[in-house]
Every structure is written in structure tokens, then in C-alpha cells.
Length: 135
Image 1 (cartoon, one colour):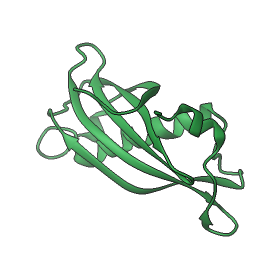
Image 2 (tube, helix red, strand yellow):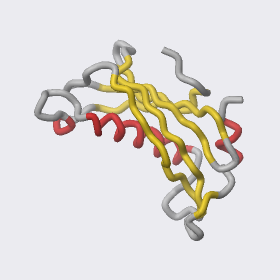
Image 3 (spheres, one colour):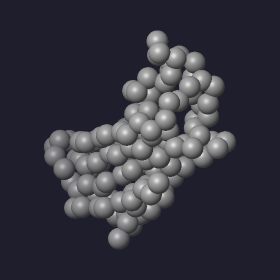
């Protein structure tokens, strides 16, 4: 499977027993939590958008395609890709893979808009993110 953009981060995480639902597999919201954690860790590693920063990311659109059932025990790797950058936004994609086999459990997408936290309006995307985006 091909994901658009440039690989910018890879993060391993364990599926917790409590992430399972009554059907014996990971609840669909868990996939979004994995994507969110990967995004937050990635942005923090760039020292962007921290809780005390005057600007930061807001997710305005997100989606997931569930490809394979995820069950406990499992360790997954979330790969994050930066694709198209606009004046105030960045398209990001995620691949959720098995850490041992590389099998893909899910693909995800999130459109990030950079906002001024005081005015609550969009502001210029940081140059650091723009530089990481696919050309």
C-alpha cells in the first residue's frame, strides 16, 4: 500500500487489554487514539504546538480505513506522513502496522489547521512543517 507524502515519524505502541470491545477486537476509536498519539509525539518532537504555545494544531477532518482486525496482545507501529501544505493547513496520513509482521491494520488521514490560540483563527503554518511536506 502506498501512502502519500513524506515519512516524518514512526512510533511503536502497545494495544492494551482495555482497548478491546465486546466483540474481542480493538474498538474503532482506538485506531484514532493511536493516530492522535503519533501526531502529538511527532509535533512535540519538533517543539511545535505545545499547550503553552501561542499557536497550535486543530484537526478539522479525520478519517480511517479499517483493513484488518486488531486483537490483544499486539504492538503496533504508527507511521506518520506529511503531504500537501497550504497556507494554514497540512494533510497528514497514518499507517497502523503490526510491529512484527508489517501487516497493515488501518490507514488514517487528518487535516491539520494551524491556529492562533488567542484569536481562535487560522494562522500561517510553521515553516518547519511546510519544509517536511511533500512537494
